[in-house]
Length: 270
Image 1 (tube, helix red, strand yellow):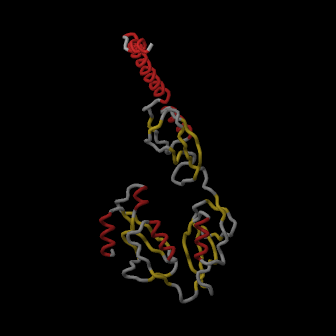
Image 2 (image 1 turned 90 degrees about the vertical axis):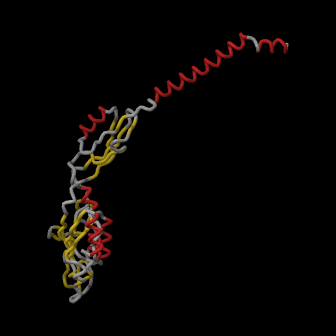
Image 3 (image 1 turned 60 degrees about the horizontal axis):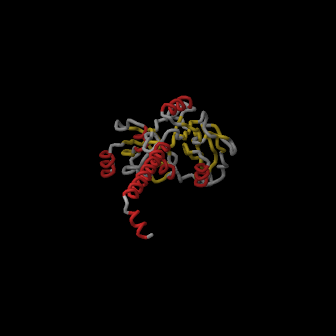
């Protein structure tokens, strides 16, 4: 029997059927892989268009052109954008995704989020500043009034109108503070702002209890991105000439994105 089996395994008939079985297995594997590629659209993707600035109707029509879907997942308020238009998307423009992928959009709210003004009077300026920042508001101008208590917030205003705790304001609003100061203690050190961005310079001035005056952009600034990354190359008053400033006074800023101008200013001090 062993001889018969050995003879059969060496026979042409067996070898033919073995080869045929191997070919069938290979063919079946190939067809399965192709079917999987077809089902998952292997290697096929569409570019994600830029939805920024489009209305919801326009965004939906654009998505259909690219065989994509959209879903509004959030809204926020941006004063520089029109109400109801797209201000953010995920995935971002230029990404490649498969057909029927959902693109998640954030639209611009028609009105800013409202926040509650905290209790800011009869506390120190430092405490008030923390509460203002935590509530989503910003400090505008700081002015001073004679008082027996140094740095105590005496009054809160917006557009010269007195405000009280609990009032609702648009998020990001600037509020003005009137701070108490003892007579004869009306000056502060004038900070050197050269090389700082505008937000950094504003924060430094607030720390020194000074106000941001006029911001002057030079010819190198031609876009919104430039204004965001611009740095101070000149300020008035000049801290190298005037070491102190009156509390609540303003400091004017000249800003640029010209690195040579910034380096020259920081090296020479104007």
